[in-house]
Length: 203
Image (cartoon, rainbow, N blue to C red; front, side, top):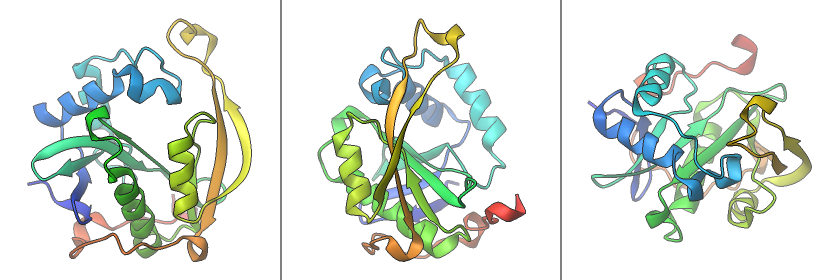
């Protein structure tokens, strides 16, 4: 049974399962050059379904998941994550959608749901995003929910991966809970089984 972490008007967000459908979606996303170009993999991650399944299995008991599946009706359309609170007690949020679902308002709906869920169910202080400097659409989404640009940085991959990675220049966006513009995106009750999230200080 796929218990939702939360639901929005059109979307259901839940933890990934090590089944064929979820593994196929994640493998497709992570190997897609257009999806991965702004996170340092211009040719895709070049990862096998077996390796994806191993990562999902290792992540199953993690209360903060990098492997949340985004569904629209019966279609699996993307992945998102609620990161472990960092040293500033902020959740780094991120999402990836299949290209055929871009420019249909799903990004706004998803980031609104993620931000609202964190504000209502996490003990952390707020949220954080690190969109690529060329990813204007992602920057606009973080600003839309109330995040402010606080700085910039460049992530460098290990030299051993230079043949299939590139550095990621990015901006740093943050917002404390009282700065987040809640869009009332969530719909319906959130099951108790999915909302037990310790604060950064208790990890």
